[in-house]
Amino acid sequence: MKNTCTVILNHLTDGGNKIFNHEYGILLITLVSFLVFPRLSRTIDITAAPVDPGILSIVIIAVLAFLIFKSVTWWAIRAIWPVFAEYSELQFEQNFTSLLSWQKVLIYLGFYLLLLFGFVVTLAALM
Image (cartoon, rainbow, N blue to C red; front, top):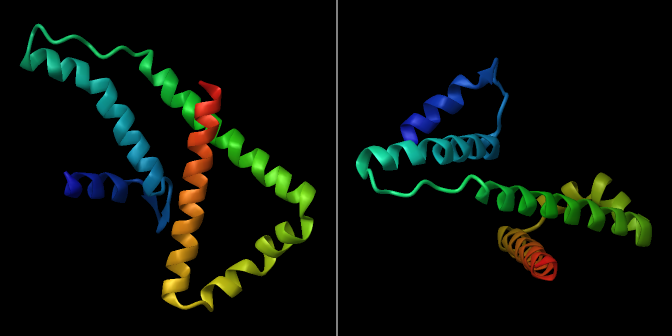
């Protein structure tokens, strides 16, 4: 499976510039497998119930909620703390690359977990 995905992603390159990055390839493969799964499951078991296509709406709503959450937080950072927004655009990358590896890992995991927690709380508030 990994070799097939690698071949597909390699075919989606244009002179070294990838048309799709890794995340878009995974989304494409997931969407295709979701669309192919009902027919595949029916060939294996005739009595298998098809997957309801309405379930995709929940995924779309979750992605939209995440994008809205991300844009609203970035807007709030720019409005409340513009110096931080300017620092993150101009100087953060240089300072981050000068850190030790364990400091980078702590910052990365801390940021990821806070973002995930904020997203889960936002979705819980929407439900």
